[in-house]
Amino acid sequence: MKVDVLTIFPEFFGQVFEFGIIRRAKLASLVEINVLDIREFTTDKHRMVDDRPFGGGDGMVLKPEPIFAAVESLVGTCNKADYPSGTRVMLLTPQGQPLKQAVVKEIADKSEHLVLICGRYEGVDERVNEVLVTDEISIGDYVLSGGEPAAVVLVDSITRLLPGALGSETSAVNESFSSGILDYPHYTRPAEFSGMRVPDVLLNGNHAEIEKWRREKALEKTRKFRKDLLDEDDC
Image (cartoon, rainbow, N blue to C red; front, side):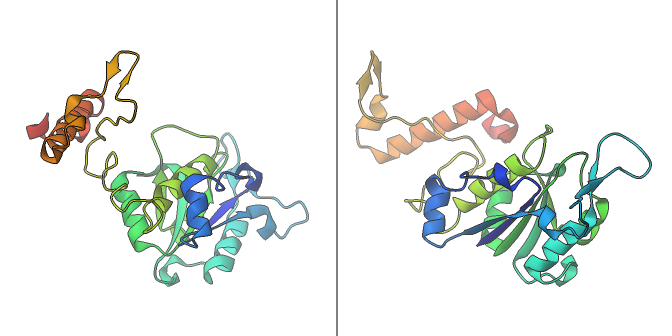
């Protein structure tokens, strides 16, 4: 998968993609990540990327011209109807579709080239949404200073679902939200620490009992923290 990130603050990303699973995926050529400065696609001597909104109001709005030029340079067209198969241009914005695990999996399974536009200020000129953007993505019901942190979250969540990115083929399947509920509790050595003992069921080698215990504990945790994820029968 190829990922191009469009931002006015490329320095933000620094070494953020040089750790852990993302780094291993890059070294294994599972994902290619490029960060591009939107200012490089301006044509005026001041390299202006924003301007005041028509109709008045607070703040500034990212201009359409450099974003159109950037997307066209990356995908060969500035009309989403003509994008190559597997290409998606995504705007990170609080107004977007909530980023759920099912959304992450769909993106990982069906995309070959992602162009991520990091919004800033009061937003992006709406013509960018209308003509370029295939998906608007939000990582939560809160407002960030820009789309850069959200882009990191999106890249991380997608990369770990790429085949071969994780050490175990079942790791991603067993994580929180992959089955619709939260993950079960995890324990490791030592079996006893400061008077706290690992549950006996995890030490007896009975895999059927272990799976039953894990399911019960996952439901218990979901009832406590995210009851909204449960069906009526599980509540």
